[in-house]
Image (cartoon, rainbow, N blue to C red; front, side):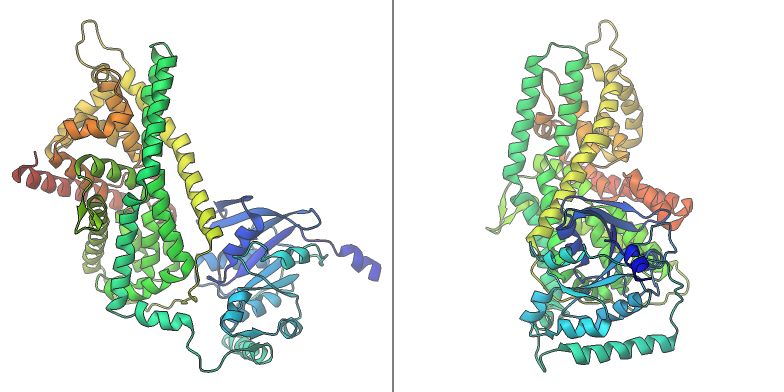
Length: 625
């Protein structure tokens, strides 16, 4: 019998990380997997999954799955439902051989409930006592041996933000475990929940000693950060500095990329004979894709701020701070984080609305998410601002271009709140849903996590440049090159091409808002991804300019040929227009209805056209034509 049991034990090859939100689980996952990780969605649902490979001290390669954060196995959201199904064997996922239940050592009172629920499943399990260094700094003494004895499973201290913070955990992953079997889990009743809470208190009384009557650092900071006046000032300053940095810090690397792109275009152009292939490489690929890559430093700076605010624990505070303000337009503070995520990209912002339990609040948040200024708009904004707004210092310390960029972001936010307020007027049974959210302890952002987050964002952006943007640039080059101009033609070849014909047709629609035929052409491929509009303009002007002007000259070229009124109108267009088919597809997945997709596209296009018309006419009246 003993021999049969021994034969059934084997080292785990499939491990899942389970834990509450904000317990440092993802930081631990990044530490264990390094660059051997990828992000996708679970089959059939739009819930993000992170999976990767780790190597144990014995040299074994182990599959690691980072489960969505959950407070309990009794789900209140789609994320928690996925976690429950994976650990109970109810999903299409293979049952993990071992659960690593990650806990926040500074907040075991909240974390232990999930640990006890997971223990009841009967799966092989290890408890990772994460942030143990921070607990010691706060004067919290955790008796690891006593906690291990009371839980009946191994308890291992980890520090997810330290290079060797998972050394002991990795060593434990080579230990053999029993075969995992699916459990017959049922939702706990009220008495079960009370019993679990009593057990948590009992274990804490034995294994944890907290300093009595001390006001920790987080509480002291919150006195300012959550203050209705000073807190709003802190939030405004943080957002303002973020947009100032986008222009101020990025100038040097952007100049280097610009110079490199120009040199590459000159070198390729000089090395190849005149012909279609030379035109494709210089006017199509280099002029188009190169005109977008230049904005990578600004996008990474924007993400650096967002990642740092998230990793520090500040974002939930901002949600609480804005709860009352957002309530005036029919939303709750819970909408803040999805909307802030939309500054990076509207797609994860739309997906993040799953945390909003009230369907009407969730739907309104989805509908206004595209009005947040995503990073794909940044190349367009940066191009137009650099071309038409002088680089000047205001009040001796502020960059004028940064101020304009900040104003565009504020314009998008104000517009979103106005749309939400209008939608509130048409909603029946308006009931304000209360905001309940955990406030994690403040901590310094981990440089490792920041670098990994920036690496992932840079890779995603460059992959888009190398796939979607490059493909559309080549297609646009083809449409702009063929058919060839007729005998005796005097104008640029693009005027006689398919793209030129399309642009001339669209010009009748967009002329009232100040757009010429070149802009009209660029808007079409820009539907796939907003930043493609910049590469499209580079391609169009490279093919329509006289001589050897290429995309490196795009900024001065449009500064000379466009009026300020046209530039302002185009900026306003990109505040509103839903030029991202991927976002519309995400809305279809999240709402499971084409109706809301058409409503979103329709109202955003209508807002864009009306706002551009008003902007253009006012600018002309003020002499900006």
